[in-house]
Length: 425
Image 1 (cartoon, rainbow, N blue to C red):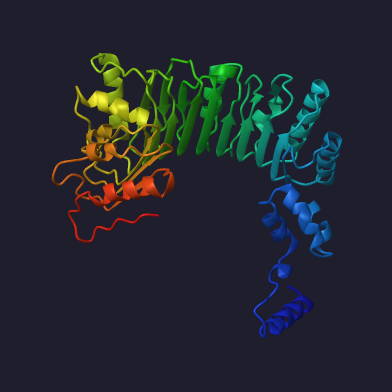
Image 2 (spheres, rainbow, N blue to C red):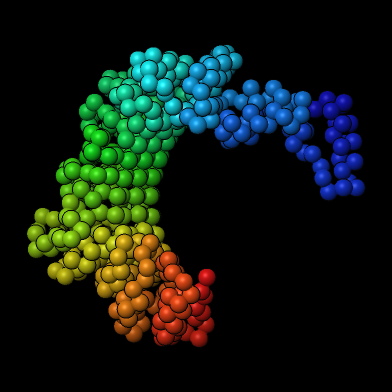
């Protein structure tokens, strides 16, 4: 900092001693301000141009673009804005390029245009790329093949696009992949992409088989820490194999997946599970079927060491049926449990809770109205859940009358400790 700048800062600080307002932001260098603005949408960044003369052109130096289709309603202005941004930054590295593309119906022209934009940001060393194609219903947009060899890429988030055929992958710094309704030419391309990213830590895949989405059959990664797989409207009946020895967080919503196999599960800490193994909700699976029973047993063993769990009512049904012919493993480490009910089948819950001797926090939630008669069915033996410290029930209540009935029911539940409090919010 030169002497003139030091004097200006001291003068500002001196003036600020008599008042509580000090403009520290104006003392920050442009480079740091641009990094702060990088966390805002482009629409909000442009709004800062009215703050002062200095801010009038600062927004143009922000090394990123975050533009939604609703931000610029006229298509040709949208195109001009993006083109000018890329021209202005043609000699610099671009850190972030997030685009929700609107389209105007001219498919062939738009595809060429967007592919050119993506090739440009790849050439400029993009770190964070997010592209959402919610446009015109003219067919799926195919990304350029250069996306597979962007050596600067750190995060890749895509929605409603098609990936090119995979021939060469070079993504040494890619840590985050999010794929929502993304299509691949072959299931093996997705598997190869995951395996080839040596730095991959976070993987999120949402598929919709009704529109021809990819079937996730195998996830192999030595570096993966978090994996989320959400399967919507599925008809696929394949197995899902997860081989990630360092995996800490796992979220699975896969109703139609025939089986889930987790290898090297010793590092798992938290899971969010919602699966029924291709069994309709109105028909429970046959626990006497040995292959499926063995698969479920291995899965429960794989997640039995976790500390935190979110579980659906459908999966709770699977546990209840399984426990009728086979004892559940003990979940010794489980201290936090959240159960999501779509119907009040309270009798399913104690079966699982008996396998959680060290549970400290229990949250029960539903979007449906509470059937108070279910509360009386929710009981356990003396000493049931000896470590439990906190229980929370989240339910919608209609009017004061219903709330009063529920409160009375809750207050009639015996409390084994004088320090136990019931709080109604």
